[in-house]
Amino acid sequence: MERIRLRGQVPTISEVLQIAIMKMDLMGDDELIEFLRCPRHEIVISENVAREFRNQSLQELKSDPGDEFIYPEIL
Image 1 (tube, rainbow, N blue to C red):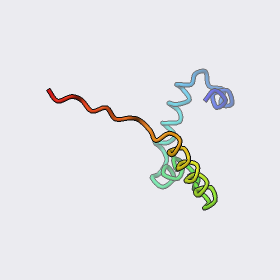
Image 2 (cartoon, helix red, strand yellow):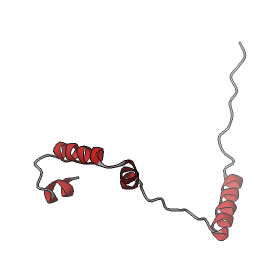
Image 3 (cartoon, one colour):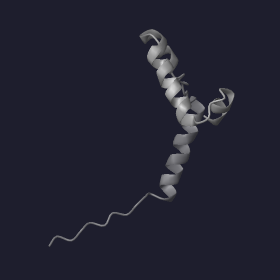
Image 4 (cartoon, rainbow, N blue to C red):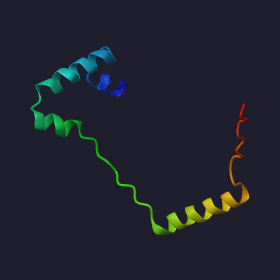
């Protein structure tokens, strides 16, 4: 935000936000939708990574099976 403020020679960040909102309000629906669209990155986990993760998870469970359960006493 600071970089945008300085580039636009605007005195405060709140003024930058006000200007941005006013300009977005002037956009048509399609233009605004495209402007606000955030690129998404697809995360792909290879079989090798999934297999290694599974193997290490199982190994960890064998060495430390997890929390012990302590059941409350019935009054």
